[in-house]
Image 1: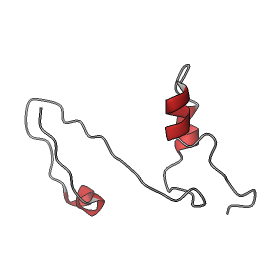
Image 2: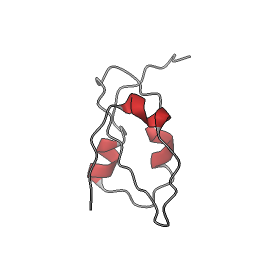
Image 3: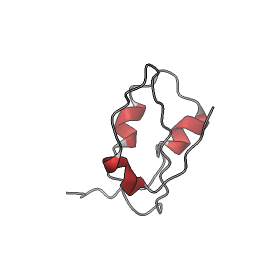
Image 4: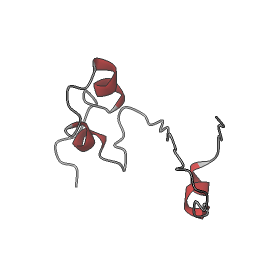
Length: 70
Protein backbone atom coordinates (compact mmCIF):
# COMPACT_ATOMS: atom_id res chain seq x y z
CA UNK A 1 0.00 0.00 0.00
CA UNK A 2 0.87 3.66 -0.08
CA UNK A 3 1.23 6.16 2.74
CA UNK A 4 0.88 9.93 2.58
CA UNK A 5 1.94 12.16 5.47
CA UNK A 6 0.57 15.68 5.18
CA UNK A 7 -0.52 18.75 7.06
CA UNK A 8 -4.13 18.57 8.29
CA UNK A 9 -4.98 21.83 6.55
CA UNK A 10 -4.73 19.96 3.25
CA UNK A 11 -7.70 17.79 4.27
CA UNK A 12 -10.18 20.46 3.22
CA UNK A 13 -8.49 20.91 -0.15
CA UNK A 14 -8.56 17.24 -1.14
CA UNK A 15 -10.17 16.13 -4.36
CA UNK A 16 -12.98 13.58 -4.82
CA UNK A 17 -12.02 9.92 -5.06
CA UNK A 18 -12.66 9.13 -8.73
CA UNK A 19 -11.10 5.68 -8.66
CA UNK A 20 -13.00 2.39 -8.40
CA UNK A 21 -11.30 1.61 -5.08
CA UNK A 22 -12.12 2.99 -1.61
CA UNK A 23 -9.70 5.48 -0.06
CA UNK A 24 -8.78 5.02 3.58
CA UNK A 25 -7.25 7.54 5.92
CA UNK A 26 -5.78 7.30 9.39
CA UNK A 27 -5.82 10.68 11.09
CA UNK A 28 -3.46 11.34 13.96
CA UNK A 29 -4.03 14.08 16.49
CA UNK A 30 -1.57 15.32 19.08
CA UNK A 31 -2.98 17.48 21.84
CA UNK A 32 -1.87 18.43 25.32
CA UNK A 33 -3.73 16.58 28.10
CA UNK A 34 -5.13 19.82 29.50
CA UNK A 35 -6.79 20.74 26.17
CA UNK A 36 -10.02 19.38 24.74
CA UNK A 37 -10.03 18.22 21.15
CA UNK A 38 -12.62 19.49 18.67
CA UNK A 39 -13.57 15.89 17.92
CA UNK A 40 -15.60 14.14 20.67
CA UNK A 41 -13.55 10.97 20.91
CA UNK A 42 -15.21 9.92 24.19
CA UNK A 43 -18.61 10.04 22.52
CA UNK A 44 -17.34 7.79 19.73
CA UNK A 45 -15.81 5.41 22.25
CA UNK A 46 -19.32 4.54 23.47
CA UNK A 47 -20.09 3.08 20.02
CA UNK A 48 -17.26 0.51 20.18
CA UNK A 49 -18.13 -2.90 21.65
CA UNK A 50 -15.56 -4.07 24.21
CA UNK A 51 -12.77 -1.59 23.41
CA UNK A 52 -9.29 -2.63 24.49
CA UNK A 53 -7.41 -0.71 27.16
CA UNK A 54 -5.19 0.80 24.46
CA UNK A 55 -8.21 1.95 22.45
CA UNK A 56 -9.78 3.54 25.54
CA UNK A 57 -6.51 5.32 26.32
CA UNK A 58 -6.01 6.57 22.76
CA UNK A 59 -9.58 7.89 22.60
CA UNK A 60 -9.12 9.87 25.81
CA UNK A 61 -11.27 7.94 28.27
CA UNK A 62 -9.08 9.02 31.19
CA UNK A 63 -8.31 12.51 29.89
CA UNK A 64 -8.99 15.40 32.26
CA UNK A 65 -12.12 17.26 31.27
CA UNK A 66 -13.19 20.46 33.04
CA UNK A 67 -16.71 20.34 34.50
CA UNK A 68 -17.82 23.68 33.08
CA UNK A 69 -16.78 23.42 29.43
CA UNK A 70 -19.08 25.59 27.31
